[in-house]
Length: 233
Length: 276
Image 1 (spheres, rainbow over the protein chains, first blue to last red):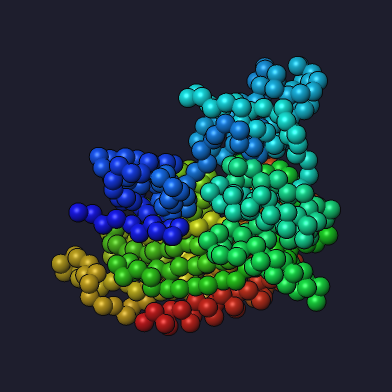
Image 2: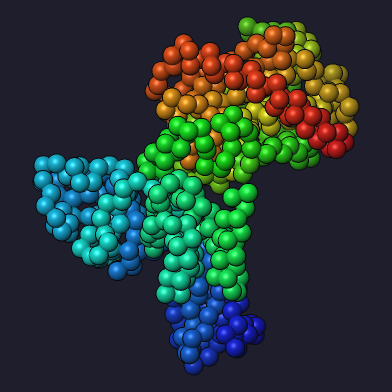
């Protein structure tokens, strides 16, 4: 018999694809798991997590899988007669139709609003087998001007944002920057000066390198104040 | 590639106007260089070079072959590069693309035109048998300035190379037999500079972001003769250089060569010694 993984007391264990997490019909397979006979088997690499009856995997690596409702940052790859074809850091490209832009746009000059290479903040309205549809209807969505773009591991986005946005708020306040974290792992930082933006970039990289440290928010806060003082010397 | 962002490129341009770079380096400053020789047992010589996060491995293999008709008394040199998808998502498997061919040829030209390898001494029988030197470049991680890293690695690997034992009667090479004969190298050790032009400024040793933000590059290989001479030069990219700008670049390259070349030479020397 294969060994089961100890999952008591919220203990999380690293599992690899094909590994049996738990056996028995008491449990339900969640994200990144599958039922095979009596066993619940992992099919992604990550941390096995038990929440009541549900077993799921918190992935440690992997690509961004588009979900409806995700707010992402994309880049315009091509312009068609009725919208924009965009790259959203995923295997499938996304389409932003003209009808989903809540403002007047000259139909003959789509590039006036978004040109090839421009970055924008959008929401995924639909995920189909053919591709992903985007919308700009919503608060704070639209073209991104200025600032810098950095790429992080999409699986680490929740940690960068923190509980109810605590982590990102901390970084925003310390670096005095506007930061938008797309669910697809693209981050846009804009501050009053380049130094502030680079400081925020450093802080975000600090977080992504230490995603599984307990009490990370305090550590980040310490790191930020140390960096600030170090920079002044 | 989504990470090649015009927003970041614009910021790099703006920041460089004041002579600043994102990682707080001077425009002509190199990142930390780490050299390790003798990383492969099966090759005649090998080296691993890291410049910052950029990493390149180079292996040298030797074989006996027929000389080329235009140089019957000279050994053959062949440099090939493989840019692996491991090193950056922009590279793909399959036959070498433009980047890989260009990198191989630039390294080849720098070594060949500086006459760093004494190819005349690699002749066994004139017109019939000569040594053939294969230099294979593999990119492990590309965080910008792959060319300079590959060049340093190629030089280090050549310094590490031992010519295998060749049995003239049997016409066979015994690769297993330990050899102490080093590759015949001359004094003209070349050093390669890739100068990247961003706006009206230029930088050396760019990161990946800076590379994609640049207008193009000017590649120069220098030999440490007195005065320092250029043995290979290439401009790639769609841009123009004014005469003033060009002499500015040459002055700067000469200045940087004085400090970085002895440093790299020392690193290779200590690494080759450790490898024994």
